[in-house]
Amino acid sequence: MNILQVVSYFVPAQYYGGPARGAYEISRELVRRGHKVTVYTSDSLDARNRIQLPPGNTIEMDGIKVRYFKNLSNWLGARHRLFLTTHYFSAVRDHLREFDVVHIHEYRTLQNIAVHHYAKRYNIPYVLQPRGSLGRMAPKQRLKQVYDALWEYKLLKDASKVLALTKTEVEQCKSMGVSEDKIEIIPNGIDVSAFGDLPKSGEFRVKYGLKDNQKIILYLGRIYWIKGLDLLANAFASISKDFSEAKLVIAGADDGYLPALKKAVKELEIEEKVLFTGPLYGKDKLEAYVDADVYILPSIYETFPMTVLEACACGTPVVVTDRCGIADIINGQVGLVVPHDRNQLSDAILRMLTDDKMRQQFGEKGKALVRQKFDWSKIVEQLEDVYQDVLTKGSTGKKGN
Image (cartoon, rainbow, N blue to C red; front, side, top):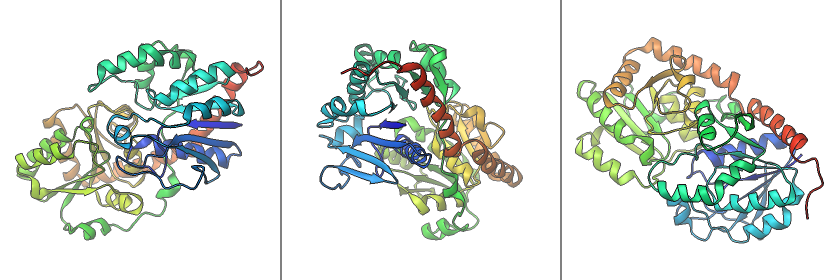
């Protein structure tokens, strides 16, 4: 198959979180399986920087043809996920007919308007993977409603398949008018091979001057209001009163919430017990997971966080809120699930820190879980079946002109 992947940002852009990495891993695995894969994306690296590219803005990466379109405002992209890519519409108009199937990542983007229009005109089937972007949570709730009414209900209606990450996202799709027979659950995955040779225990502690007897509570991800980091700070403040050797490590790129979070940490008088590392990638990230005693994801809303799978792959037990879409996978198997409540979160963290046997059991189960169910090779095998199904059912006639 000749497959087009459409995503607003792509590796090496790590600032934006999971969709860029997910689209890359899917594309790489598809190439390994003999498919031809092209990616249309923006050249945005983060709020201030662009990806450095050769003339033509097209490169080959692990067998994937990646075409980066210039984004007019990286600030708008970083702060509002609004990507204004030049020459994108004409490229879709001129080249979309070359592809057998299109895979759209995320929901409300200007790029999707072009893809939808020409896919319908040329009779090219496409699958839509919202990746947690269907919700209309504040801010910009009304703007999202207007956008949906103008364009994106059509995007959902005309998709050959809508790929939900979890059962929760299935219900979101159905509430927006998608028939259940058009929905497939395709979860996120990770490259299990990247976790086969983990760093030695203690390297993160040495790098940041942490003592061997300190219990490390880790959050790793974007520093954004929806991640619930104010709840984590308050829960940790309660813990640290009676557990003086606990250390809260917050690792990640600022997505607009860092000043408010640091202010909250100061007001709670826990500054000396909280370590802000900035974003961690590659080996640095693995070192943090390996040395952490527990990984916390206190999100207000989350669909399928890849960081939880990464923590599990490193043998680190997890605590998440019940607002995370994968709570049913976590609860009692590889970690604990709690309501979005300070007292219950602090109690769960304390249980983890004081029960070595439970942490070990959850850690071992976590490693087994990701190997058995969430390696990208297994996920893309399911995705291939979806592509083949939409090709068989959705594009039997001659493509339009």
